[in-house]
Image (cartoon, rainbow, N blue to C red; front, top):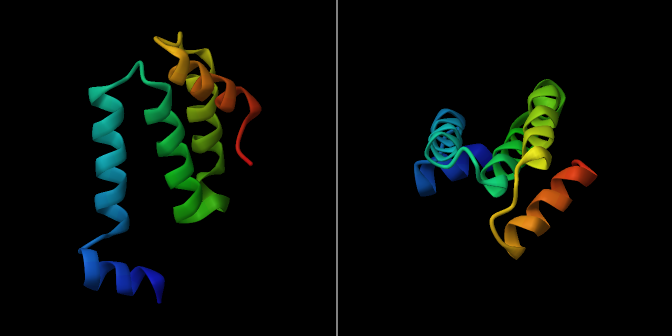
Length: 83
């Protein structure tokens, strides 16, 4: 029911969400938060089948060099892994 309401209300779809995450990662490949949010989005869409890809995105984020204090928090969060 949630996906139906999201589609009707916000024109949201699984396909559109994945396209937006992929575009964000392409535009900001060195951004830890882009990796984390993509991973979290994958887990929200389907934790079972997307778990390996999400874990890989967390691993990638954990290896990035933070540009500032906020990114340091994101990298540290990635090192802890998904909740």
